[in-house]
Each structure stands twice: as C-alpha cells, then as structure tokens.
Length: 369
Image (tube, rainbow, N blue to C red; front, side, top):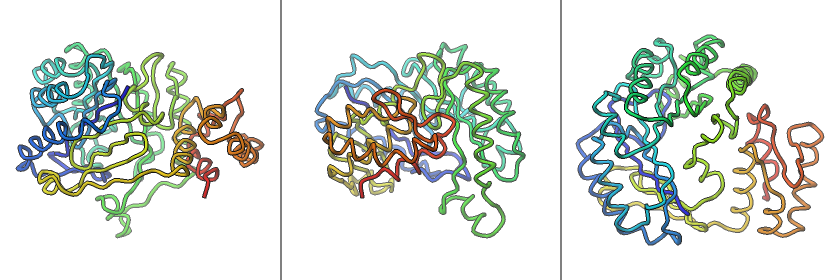
C-alpha cells in the first residue's frame, strides 16, 4: 500500500525556526488549491499500488483552510486512488485555530491530529514567533477530545537557546498531563534562511552546545519512557499501538505521493519535488526528479533504518544488496558495536534509543561512498 501527503503552504505568521515551504501571503490560496486538485488527477498514475493506507495534511498550516476544503482534496483523491482501506488521516493544526466548531467539522475529515504546541512557556513561544499561548495549547487538546479525537500527537521543541535547560523537561511534564497518544520532540535546528538563523549570524543568538542538547534529549527520553511511551524513532514517542503510521511509511521506504508546493514524492526508484514557489507551483512548473542509484537506495536503507527502534534488518539488506555487501557493512559497523553505539540483536543492528542523537553520524559512517 501507499501513502498520500498534502502540503498546505500557508501561514498567518512565520515561525522564527521554520525553513519549510511556507508563505504568509494567502492571496494565492485559491490558485494553489486548484493546482493541487489538478496535480492529483495528473500524477496519481505514478503510484504502482493505488491503495492508500495513510493520508497526511502538513504545512505550513493546514488548519487555516476550512475542513471542507481538505475534504474536497480527499474526494478528488478518491476519484483516482483507492482510499477504501485508509487506516489513518492526520491533519496538523495550530492551537489557536482549534475552535469547537472547527474541530467538530474537522472530525469528519480526519481521525488523528498533530497539534503544534512546541512549548508551554509563553516567553518561549513569543521567542519562536508562535501565534498561540500556552493556555490556548492546553485548551486545544481539551477541545479536540470533546470533538471526538482519540489519537492526538503533540510537538515539542527542545534545545532552545536563551531559556533554561529545565524548560523542555517542564514542558514535557505538562504535556504528559494531557495524555497525548503520541509526542514528537525535535531538537531546535537553526537554518540560515530563518529568523533564528539571521539572529545567529548577527551574534544576537547562539545555538546550545552539544552536551546540553544531549542532556535535554536524555531528560525527555527518561520522562516519556517512564510514562509508558515507546521511543520508536529518533524524535518520536508513542503509547502502545499509537505509532504514527504515515510518518513510519517514510522510514520504511513506502511509496508516497506528495501533492502541493514543495511536496516530495517517492515511487520506489524515483524521488521528485514540486517547486517551492507557490507562483510556479500554481502554474504547473518547476518539478525536479531524481532517479535513485543502487548506492543511493543502499545508503537510504541504512540511514532510515537506524533512526528506528527496530534498526537495520541485515537479512533484508542482504536480499536487496547481496550477502557480500551485508558482510562488508557488518565489518564496518564493528567499531560502533564495540563502543555501544550499535547493538546486534539477532539479525538486526540497532542503535539504542539513548544513543539516537548520534544516529546520523553512525549511519553516514556506514555509507557506501
């Protein structure tokens, strides 16, 4: 089965850390939505397996659109893809969009919410240029429960310079009181084109050092796992049976179709990306495609597998890339096994969750160059 992603690039306000494809100019919204319907009809044939298992609305801010607009996109998809077996439909929402009426209407479209809380400290939220308060975030979860959502994910950002190390742990404790089914906890990454990036360049802000980032990471790991959450991927925690099915499809190389400005797609051998310019996207221009080589696919399997609690299945690796390739990888992995950064569990190589912070480093050291 395949996955379907819709990228809604519009925002009322640009967050200080965000380098996703987004715009605060809503004037092109109608043109972009029209282009998304058109793109769906034109590109649905790219998926070999037209059975869709998961649907995800990301952004940007999908909750800026009426739920009925999201429903229309689903209906267009149902006209050219098989949505009869969808197991999960997620919509990202901003807390201050979560009115009772909006959530009641949204429940007809989605069965899962991803609520962009990020922090429950009002000063931190202002620094991030978020447009909600901690009180609004708490109320959003309460209202979502009232509307019938029993599968809620919340986002948390840690490693925020200028705030005490305890801030993210206190955020986590307050989020746990909400009993979300899922938590995504991301270390703040400062990108050059963002407001934070410009502040760093001017010397007005600095990134937290590696040691502090690791301490905050481990504090969150201990809090969430002690509360019964499974740390199943570098940045993700879930109660039993509540892993994010859609995001998991990215990590196990499930084909997916991405619709919208800047959206990525993967069809098994080909990755493509729509233009990040809403003007170009609305005009149907600017798509880039890349045919993956055998080496690309090998390295991606290593990278994506080592991000997850299950790790890398060496039998599956040998089936795809040959027994000699698997043996060479196992030899290259031995220094990390001896240091404890990698653990061999039967036929799998696994990075222990407490070492997930260095997963990219370990994986890249095992790449075929």
